[in-house]
Length: 97
Image 1 (cartoon, rainbow, N blue to C red):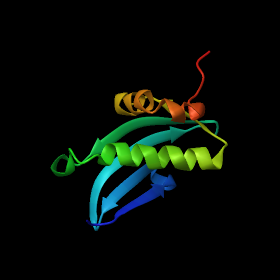
Image 2: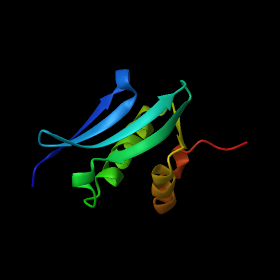
Image 3: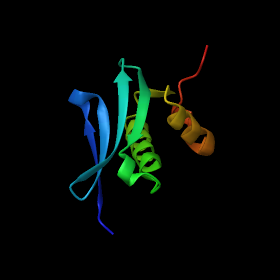
Image 4: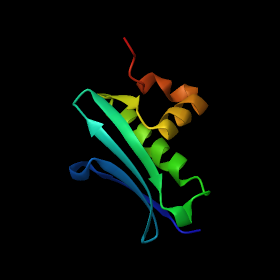
């Protein structure tokens, strides 16, 4: 199996996931300094069905958890569903007022 490469492209406000040289998934976000609003998880159509969207969300959330200075707002439906399926990762979720 070809190795997956996860990259944070802060200047483009996105995370990317590559399989070899192929871009397979992108996670767009907005960061206001306190909250990372994950706005769109997208997998290139020819690579769908292999769990890449879940993988990129998992890795992005892990990076935010490690930094410890941001919360996540799951604007994208896929990201919201991912958090619902992974309640143990909910500590990083933004609390609604």
